[in-house]
Amino acid sequence: MAFGKVSVKNLTKSFGGADGKKTVIFENVTFDLPEGAVLRLTGASGCGKSTFMNVMSGLIKPDSGSVFYGNTDISSLSESEKDRFRAENIGYIFQTFNLLSPFSVIENVFAPLAFAGKLTKDYKEKALESLKKVEMGDFAAKMPYHLSVGQKQRVAIARVLFADPKIILADEPTASLDRASSELVKTTLLELNKSGKTLVLTSHDPIFDDVKPDIEFNLETGKIS
Amino acid sequence: MKYIFILKAVFHSIKHRKFSVLLSIFAISVAFAFLAAIGCVSFGLAATAVNSSLTFPLVVGPAGASDTTLVMSTLFNIDKPFGTLDYETAEKLAKDERVAAVFPIARSDSYMGIPITGVESTYISEISNGFEAIESGLKEDDIFGENGRNCVVIGSKTAARYEMKTSDTFFGSHGSVGDEDARLHDFEYRVCAILKAVNGPEDFAIFTSLSNVWKIHEHGHHHHENGEETEHTEGKITAVLVKTKNPVFTAALEREYSENGITSAADTAKTVRKLLTYMNKAEKAAGFFSYGTLFLVLTMVFVTILSSINERKREMALMRTLGIGRAPVSLMIFLESFFISAAGIVAGITLGHSLLVVFKPWIDFELGINLEPFFFTEVEIRGIFWTLAAGTALSFAAMGKIYRMNLVEETAKE
Image 1 (cartoon, rainbow over the protein chains, first blue to last red):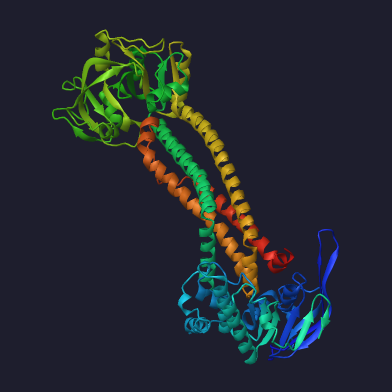
Image 2: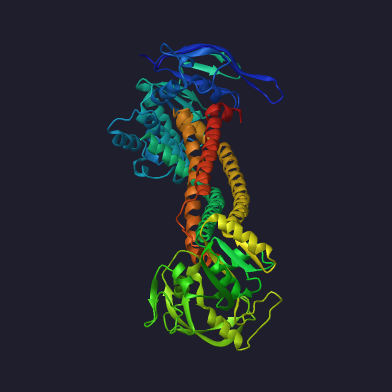
């Protein structure tokens, strides 16, 4: 099944404020994102880019509308089915706070699939291989607090490489990184995209300026191009 | 693998908050140790009291002595005796056809805080379980006979505590037990025999013959602490322990000897029941405070867990984002909370019983009870059950809170 194809239909989300007034984050958003395409979310900080990603992945319920992965409406899945779906099909990379502090670097790589009960026999070798691809093989046994922000980001990418998801959601993935680390992150993401992964990206980093998205959605204006 | 990860996350969180976790465990364990200790002590005291009441159903003492004073001063060696009565009372009781045996006792001197009680050889035969050691030439069934001059028979724990053996000698102090002003006598006692343990107050006692008690006082070393101080001239005793032929006779004799104006009498079983009722009340009150403390501590654990949920919302939201389900995430919270309650109980049981082992000699000696430090009383077992139940309920409440929460949405709103 082509889970990499994403169809967003009439998606609306608002949050109730402390004063009881509703703030609409996005309204009636509709687009089709083919498998292996790039969607770039733009807009100022706080306009709702992360919320849109969370709604896309089924973590936050929309007020109305649906998100289809292939023919599967994510909102029709039960909570545990959504969890398994995310663990197997969606890879997340955040600006910061990417790793789970109780687990070592290598455990962070395979933790999502371990919880989903989807580990293969050679999972340790594969996890180490993923870490080596982002030059973090020597840090496999370290705990997250031993790592710099850039190193944590690389581990998050190794986690995506290990899980081999259909869709990658990258939320300001290079915002806290130096030039070299940013280049590594960008190259890896584009390689993954070239290999057929659908990429949803938010970034203010000019390093991504030369990446031509298939769809650009500005959450401030609501314009889709 | 999933469960190893869950346990890792639980222990990481516990390690991360070790100070508050240790404090919670310590607080639960102290409350629990108290519960374990009062349960064990009151059970030991009750068991000793009941055993003693079975041996000597009736105690007769001088007029004016209360039931509790009579029983405590004679069977437990705790209270001071109240005045004296004539030896004839014992003789009269011995002749009564309702009486199976009488054991007159006279108390006045002490050694290292232990009362030295004057008794007849028949009393030693009655309470003893044989001898650990006995001087040669003495008859086991007539220990204070012809060769028993200046003799004392000591309990096994008295011997162990003061490292006494047969033929050792010591001087007694005249005056109240434990009285710092007590004066040394020039009367030298000799350890003639050491009793085998009977697991009762007798293990911490020193017995001599009635004639020795009278002899000491003939020498004129009378020291009057107050009006209640006993003075044993020839033919004076402190009390008579009586074995009756059946309980109906006990009640009748108690009535007769309480109403004659010369003596007072206590039905041991009735008095022990009364004491046990007070003890139960005290135990309940102590238990109430222990349960109250446990409840407060468990609430504190709950509040700490809730605040730790707030601190870790982002991490748990990340778990959810990565596809780690609500169930494992809430299970982590449950296990954390449950671990604290369970660890508190285990630490409390260990602490309580260890304290009982440490203080056993002191409790045995001061209260005259034979404590079983590893005995689990009903109070303690009930305590384990309720603490576990309350701990589990609070853990479920914390788990429920996290289960219902949309962590990602909550984090997004922040």
